[in-house]
Image (cartoon, rainbow, N blue to C red; front, side, top):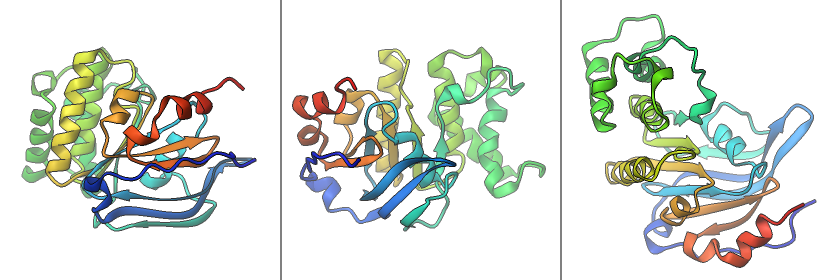
Length: 247
């Protein structure tokens, strides 16, 4: 049943005036035997940070998967206005601790989309990997096993892998969950810098502080879009209380 309340925040000028990087209309998606997203109409502004906010089961990760191209919509329209495929950074818990990968090997996987997993990396590929690792301050961790890292270090390695794809659309699933305040601040600063450098950022998040610092927000509940626009206007105490109320 479609949710009965809908609060639309007016977008801030910095986000409102940007052209869309992604548009979707009447977008529905899910898994065999289980619908998750129901006829979403929205757009993701270019050169901005968009936060996807909602309780567990609201459809945030599914929407990210659709935007990344790993989940096919069941109906509706989805349009990307960029020239390169999105870079998708999953939750760090989705990457197994037992994988025998070093940090550098993990970041190098970001070049597989252009190079393929079995071809030797070129000098340009290696330079791209170096730059991504420097950007995330993980060069000194290059030979460490991914499973040995702290939560913040591991998250930075996964984001570096996303940067190595050189996409202008970076999709992140809960990038700051479980991190200490210093690690959260480091990632928030990086995302702001990436937008300045020409990257559109979309992050699914439970972190209301991160959501409120975004340029724009999509608020989801039970797979429906119940609000979109300025986070400060949209993420009010009354709205959040209704969204997160016990079943």
